[in-house]
Image (tube, rainbow, N blue to C red):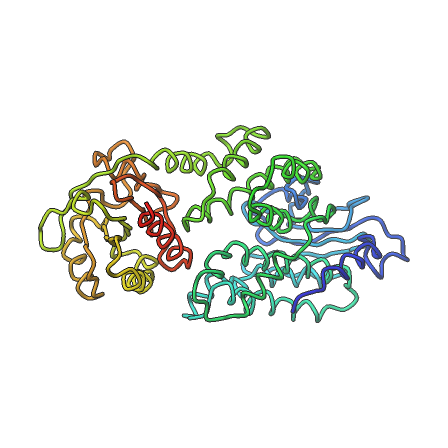
Amino acid sequence: MKFNLIISILLIALFSYQCNTKQAQAKESVQINGLITPANSKNLFLLSSTGDTLKSIDVSPDSTFAAKLEQLEEGYFSLIQGEAKIHLYLCPGDQLHVQIAEDTLLFTGEGAARNNYLKSKYSSEFDWYSNYYETEQTSDLTAYFRDHYVKKLKQKLATLSDESQFVLREGFELDYAFANQLLTNQISIETGSQSDKTLLKDLAWAKSISTDNAPALNRSKNYISLVAKILISQLEPSESVLSSYYDKITHPHLKTYFLTSLITPLYKELQYGEDDFNKAITVESFVTKKQARDSIGAYLFNLYHKFQEAEGKTASFSYEDVNGNKVSLADFRGKYVYIDFWATWCVNCIKEFPHLETLEEEFKGEEVAFIGISIDKQTHKDKWKKMVAAKGLSNTQLFSPVQGYPEKDTITDPFSKLIYLNSYYLGIPHYALIDPAGKIVDAFSYRPSNKKTEEYLSELLGQQTSN
């Protein structure tokens, strides 16, 4: 399914990014002409893959247009018509005819085959995310992306003739896109009970991709994003290492994209309680030296600091349980308290219930308590009680005065403010860990499904016993 990356890199060097059969003809210009019905705009704009406007193309009164592009380097482009975007891959020597209508897009002429492929790729047929839910798949979303997007597009790609350079480059893009999906979902693949065990092998492949392809750093956003994820997955990426990659990128838009791409894996780690504060501070320092802090990742770094500030502080609460009784955090003094913030409408929260039950059974009789705190609206209180009973949640279940995600400044509940429960960016599932003295150990801890949770609790309980 995947291209051998080492061989592909050698082939790219051999081809030197030239169109294979058109080289001998030494054609250097690209001609694009076509018809727009109806003509919604007097101009079309040809953009580079980095978003730079290369040419404004006039649309004639008869709805036709034509343009000749000199010294255009082979690669990905886009044709902008109003708010519509048409994906292109152009080679020197192309004479491409484009017919644009409200419901149709048709390419003919030299270069049509690869551009009709791109038309298909960006159609609803390969809208993998929406199609996944419409087909009610029970498989993992990442596996679906591989089998119903990458594999099928590679099959379509293989049917192109006389387009070996495009096939090679597009194959890279599909591999990089899949590797990005794997690394985005790395934590759930490694710690969850995946139905598709081949994802672990795919993940190992993604991690093995070289980060030293300098040409790709200057043309492929998929590759830049992948490199950023690989760097963040390292235990302690230094600013000097991050700078070495940043400096290899020449285009300012791609430099910004690299900085932005460093944020996504940090966010994912924090979301799963896997965050490393020192790593986040290293990235924050690097990013803010390159661009203003309020433009890239400000919300994420604020969350890191907020959670870090909460740790070690004494917490307290007194909430109502399913029977209407008040239950306080002080009632559990002397025990670690693992808190599950959830709501009846949170699908991912409910998916964690069986894993939470397993944890409870594992630590039965130990000095650790498991508490659920709902952030349902007051109007859903009866629904909450019914779900507690229906799901057989035998642990302590409480109802928080904080409902949903109100504005931070409107929260009066001290405990909710302390652990930043109103985070729009992380939301729920949200887990927190309190120590036997009532102090916050983790404001955003590992999920129950994460195998590290059991190890972490065992280690803390072991330390408590030895002390």
